[in-house]
Amino acid sequence: MAREAFADRRARAAAVLELLRDAYPDATTELKYRNTFELLIVTILSAQATDKSVNQVSPTLFQIYPDAPSLASADPKVVMSLIHHIGLYRTKARNIILVARKLMADHGGVVPNDFDTLLALPGVGRKTANVVLATAFGRPAIAVDTHVGRLARRLGFSSEDHPDRVEDDLESLFPEDSWILVHHALVLHGRRVCQARSPNCGSCSLGVHCPSRLV
Image 1: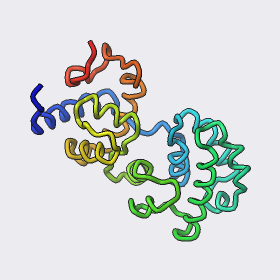
Image 2: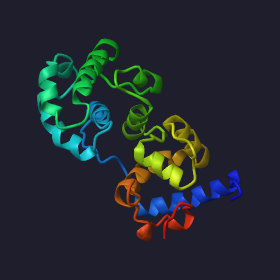
Image 3: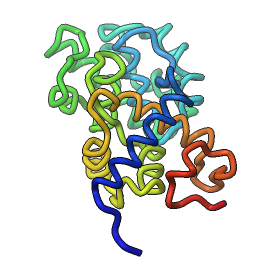
Image 4: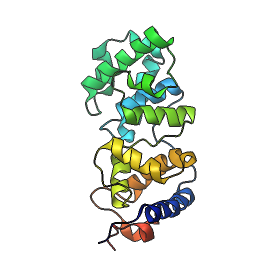
């Protein structure tokens, strides 16, 4: 099969974008949070865990530790006990306490609106930084999680496995003012339609533009 020209791939991306706008016009994170601090913490907790599981433990966590000052002084064992239903809870408990301490020490307890500064926080990678910047501050970014990566490959928008390179490929195809929607909409589509093991191609609105369609 001949390799698809970039111009043709970009045209498909434009068509997919319009379908995503129609299907998920109000797409946003399914994580529950009330402020930027909580968004940062739940996004850290969501790594290798479902949003549902994080949403189950976060209300109690934030009832006891509602802000950076309180979490910075938390007992790690208590935090572990509160989040032990999610994956990697021991490491995550330590990281969110360290994040709170660093926010207090370096940023007055406030979550920074800067990519590199967010990356310097314990447990924060590109995905988490991009989610916070896009969702809390409205800064254009495509955060690549397992759903976004999977759909990018199935749609033929990237052949890469590394999230950073998938991010580059997607950002080269979609206009910058659509990046936030693209991220959230692809996540929702990956959860509801294009699942990892059993994609529901028969009811997929993107199917006409998908080279991986099974039916």
